[in-house]
Amino acid sequence: MHHTSSEGELNDSTADSPEEACGVFGIRVEPNTRSVSHATYDGLYALQHRGQESAGMAVSDGTSITVMKNMGLVSNVFDDRMLHSLPGNLAIGHTRYSTTGSSTWGNAQPVFRAVGDSGIALGHNGNLTNTVELSNELGIDPMDLGSDSDLVAHYLAIEIAKDLGGRPGTVRESFKSHPEAVLSALNDVLPKLEGAFSLVIMDHDRLIGVRDPHGFRPLCIGRLETGWVIASESPALDVVGATFVREVEPGEMIIIDELGVRSFRPFPEESIDPKLCIFEFVYFARPDSRLLGQEVYTTRRHMGEYLAKALPVEADMVIGVPDSGVPAAVGYAAASGIPYGQGLVKNRYIGRTFISPDPASRVDAVRRKLNVLRDNIEGKRLVVVDDSIVRGTTTKSMVRLLRDAGATEVHLRISSPPYRWSCFYGIDTPSRPDLLAANRDLDEIRRFLGVDSIAYLDLGDLKAAIGYEDGFCDACLTGNYPVAVPVTLL
Ligand code: AMP
Image 1 (cartoon, rainbow, N blue to C red):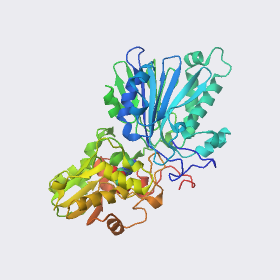
Image 2: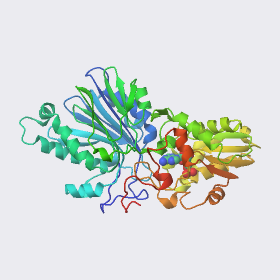
Image 3: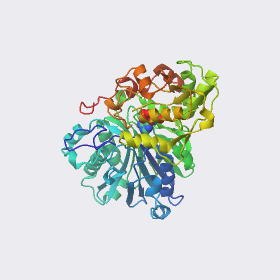
Image 4: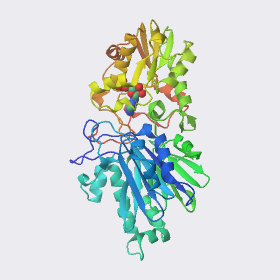
């Protein structure tokens, strides 16, 4: 989701309304078979890496929908007592990620819109690029909306209310007797959305999953003995005991109700153009996730193998920067023949340090997060493998730690190409001037970080490591944005 500012323009990530990647989850089971609130908790816990700012869920018992959300980690927001107070057979959940200070309750999801005596709840991973046009079309002041996700829920609620207009009985009854009202609202609204959106939506009866025509952000389906699950990443299926069925396809909408699972194509055929975020493979997704039929860990190991060919160097040990750099370091060591070892230890209880807004606190954050294994690295020439460099702040202080602990040489190897462009499709990134590689050549980067040599993985090799030549969004690496980005954002 992305916020709208008072000028009605989308903010950049230095303003008070950042972009974020998020995790979404949805579950629908036969009534009285299991606690969907507990399952959603487990699912969100498995997706915690996608969002640590706020967490929430909406639960339906078939009659009413209850939304609970708050700032903080999944484990801070919910406790057992709360989960027990949320009975039902249908739920969606959301974890939200952002960097700067806009941590407000209003930003938390799922968002909810009432329609008569029913309503819809929605969780969004991604970022719309035409929020301003859409709010103009609807004749609403963007100021009155919290976010682009709010806008989608609002739009859907209006269309559903229109479709049900004049029918006798309550909306809840009409939902049952006229399921096509929700379907036709979705068919009207979804094609109007531009940008990145993996959505979970529910009314009091139905679970809906949607992936935009580019499929920027992941979304998959799992099967339970008594129902179905939809989640951003497959580990959230594993944790609730669901079997991975498949990914929701780009441009596909899945409706799960008492009839089972049905697939729809609400977007025009010509708009379908798969562009899965390549950075999901590089950094964002969990290593145990399955994307495009591959286990992400394996692709990262391959990235390291390719990386070993980039700028061969003599060294005593290959280390990975925990956790994200480790799979590629293992691959690098295997391909180069240089022994793999551990040189850095990560505090298990720390989140992602990138979140700290100002440079000084990010530097401290590195010490809080990483410490050296002095005996292992003293006097050694190290190849240090990490997945990416964004601002360069944490990398620079990590290099300092290694040198202070007696590493004689530090050769940095990055298992993705230089990160040069901001993401507008749902991953939080700083604006261009803050991206280390945006305006620096390799030697300037090397000197800034204080390393003896540096090499990045080539884009072709990155794709080869994943096993697909195209079908990716690589805008952050190439500046080729598949969906037009408003000038105000650039
Ligand atoms: P820095 O040196 O400050 O650019 O930080 C680099 C580290 O940030 C790498 O170890 C990456 O794994 C990690 N990283 C890359 N992209 C992101 C992101 N969107 N959010 C949080 N951390 C990230």
